[in-house]
Image 1 (cartoon, rainbow, N blue to C red):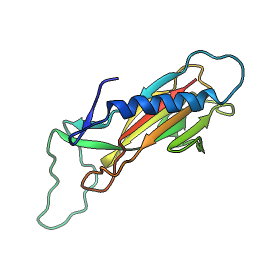
Image 2 (tube, rainbow, N blue to C red):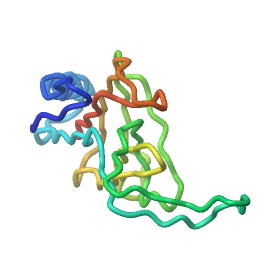
Image 3 (cartoon, rainbow, N blue to C red):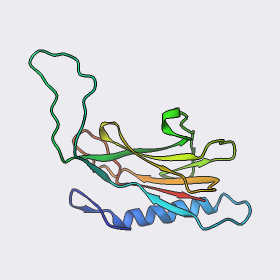
Length: 159
C-alpha cells in the first residue's frame, strides 16, 4: 500500500497494521473454508477540483466561493445495502478495539462500502463479490484537522 501523509506524519505502517488486525478479526468469524480476504483502504484525503452550491440562503452581501484543490480528510466509514441512494445503512457490531464488523447473511442487495470525508464527500465501492462479511479497522490519534475531525486510516477486510 502506498504511504500517505497527514501533516508531516507517515501513516503507511499504521494502515498496514490495521489491515492485519481487520484480517485477523475476519478470520475469527469461522464458517466453511473461504477465499482469501480482500483488503480495501480508504484514501486519507480527497482533493476536489470544483463544487456546485445548490442551496444558498440569501444573506445580504455574501456569495458562495470555492477554492479549487481543497482537501477533504477522511472522517468516517459505513456499509449500505445496495446503492447509497436507497438509504439503507447497515448496522455494525464491535469487533475489537477500533474495529467494526458487518455481516451480509440477511442482505438482499450487494453491499456498498463508503469512505466519508469532510464536506459531505463520499467515495463508494461495491463490496467484493461473494463477500459474506466485512471488518473495518479505524484509528483517530488526535491529529485532527482545523474542524476537529479526521481519521488516520480506515481499512476494510472483506471475505
